[in-house]
Image 1 (cartoon, rainbow, N blue to C red):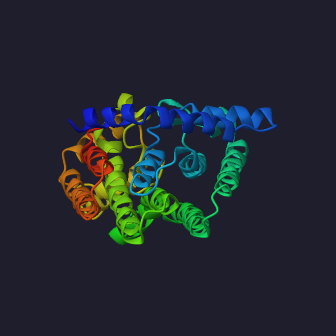
Image 2 (image 1 turned 45 degrees about the vertical axis):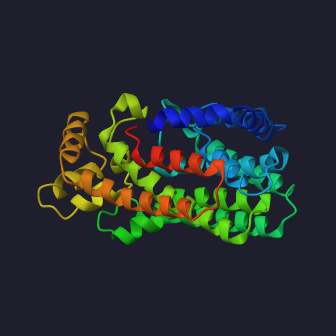
Length: 324
């Protein structure tokens, strides 16, 4: 049901999202053929364009003007794209959404400079917005995402982490950019401060819920659905919430240590993924995701009346309840 509502929402916003898509293509264009190829490769890999959707929905609580909001939505999606390129280098990922990553198609150096170029384009776009608060929000977001990338490197292959370490990491990895998308949409459209703050908190909570579900799906989905091997996060040394619930178990600890050693065979990977799927780590992780989702829904309840209110609820429920 949530998926059907999401399709309807995207259909209603199609003309505005098409405009943003065309602008993204313009944004990644440069005088370098190599940069163009790498940037377009990333852009055409697809994605739900969630951040632009949140910008546009949040803007409907103020004075909605698509030409103005385009200059907010585009840089936020560009920041997301740039962080994906950098993530793939950090994780040594070969595949994303069933396609070769930029680092796999070219190499690490091309991937890093492509990410830097896309980050720079984001900064260029936001100069079209004259509100100084918008610049402060975006600058803070970019700094925190970069700090998050370093923390992700520091935390790799460390099984002995706290839940706090994981939450801190996914805040910077995912939740912050979604929170900023909602916040900037509200601020730039002239929504009142109280509404803008509710939207910011909504974005944070829904982003936390979404990333936890994403980490669960890395284990519970099939290789075909993921477009990469199930359990890739663990094999790449990224310790996610389900793994944190199992790391102290004598039954699982040796297998988890073996998984991050880099010596795991395909048969061992499939066997471990199956065991984790059948453990209590999955329902425990889903329960925490749902707590964040309920907090997000409370923030929606506090928003003033608007058709966008129902749309935000629909997209939050889809993100927090999706099976894939």
